[in-house]
Image (cartoon, rainbow over all chains, first blue to last red; front, side, top):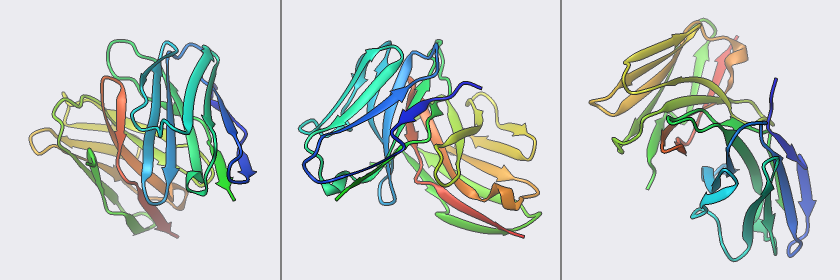
Amino acid sequence: DARVTQTPRHKVTEMGQEVTMRCQPILGHNTVFWYRQTMMQGLELLAYFRNRAPLDDSGMPKDRFSAEMPDATLATLKIQPSEPRDSAVYFCASGLVMGSNQPQHFGDGTRLSIL
Amino acid sequence: QQQVKQSPQSLIVQKGGISIINCAYENTAFDYFPWYQQFPGKGPALLIAIRPDVSEKKEGRFTISFNKSAKQFSLHIMDSQPGDSATYFCAASNFNKFYFGSGTKLNVKP
């Protein structure tokens, strides 16, 4: 059963440190999404890639967040410097675009705590 | 501006009862409406989805009702079970960009 894999599952670090979260999309999928989930804001879209090219990162604080896809099997989300307000669960999802909308498949997330 | 509005925020249902979660949207360009189920510590998992050319879709105990003119859709869980206790998210999509509702925490009492 194909799955989206996210690492690490948990991360606790101090304010100001760099945080890198990784995502391995389902093999063959050509879209990757990064979401942030908090109690207050729900699921917020941070960035969206298609065929490894960034299509939309309007939801991402540009000054400290960056998202990349160095190859088709790896997507990264970095926060530098991290702040306590970044504490949340970060989800990666992948999907396959074939003309019409197709479902997204989520990983189990990275639970990030910034002290 | 929230693209998809979901209600209720929480729901308690007795085992065997019907759970109903509602969502509304404004953008008529949305053309795909999935529902996701999320258990604690897990990512959302696709439960059932519908496209706007049909008014209802049923998969087992789960049914989506879709009202295009009212721009509303709902999830019905028949014969609700304690194992259905989870958070449910509706979503709407256009050009493969998804907008999620705020979630409904369902608790099915034994």
